[in-house]
Length: 195
Image (cartoon, rainbow, N blue to C red; front, side):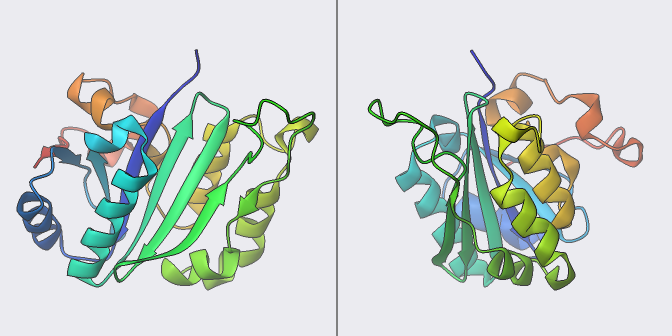
């Protein structure tokens, strides 16, 4: 069985406003330290990987705080799903392997969705558009990336996000499992905050 995780990276709102909004929404969640304007929300309901619950949370947070956020779901190490939210709307969706749940598919379809220009603009990284586009379209079977978690980690770097967005979710934080490689040394001793 492969790795499963989900989280929501929120860009630019002040941390106290994000905490207040999550409390208002009555969410069970942990918040990461804020890194270069990015705060990662590890929401308990997101661990179920239900698209409707993810979209409700992303829309609510970005509408209330007038901001951008990227939800990410890794399913069984095999598929990466992304949702871009801005100001209460879903602006983009990405599926790294659209044929994954199709039992009649005879070959893998290329990734669908994922607008590099829109993603980069949402996170103030317009200069990274070519790199983001390359990562979104990379064919894992051709060896361009070793896996979907690595795709997510590379996209996070290009979008200016902290490295722990790739691999950490609510249940891993709740269980005390936050791999050291996801927390740079300058964050030693800073705990993830429970909301």
